[in-house]
Length: 165
Image (tube, rainbow, N blue to C red):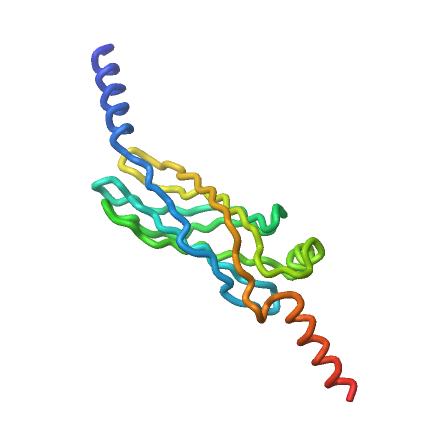
């Protein structure tokens, strides 16, 4: 019985060493749009699976900080397969409310670039059970000219002037 338990433990240890966590690179961060609720940002990740077998995404969670302010948090149960020995693109769409945008503008009204920090956990299935792959990426995202605060304020002023005529 002890031998069987020992062999089982040895087998599980060897198998767990055989599952390699994927590497994750941030390919791009883009403004995806603006609507009545706020702005949309897209974080495009490149996930490379070094294993010979597929790793299915079982969901993910994320937190985004802009200018060190915690602005967006969420999770998704989206599924996707990261095929063995290949790289796969994965998109994390993020919504930021106007109230949070105003908080950013208060800190920096001439905003042209926004420093961001993405913290995410990818939940993957493996032949031996689920694993979490932590992702931490940071950088700056360029605010498109039409969305920069001074440009928006100018458009708003023009709109008010037209309405006053």
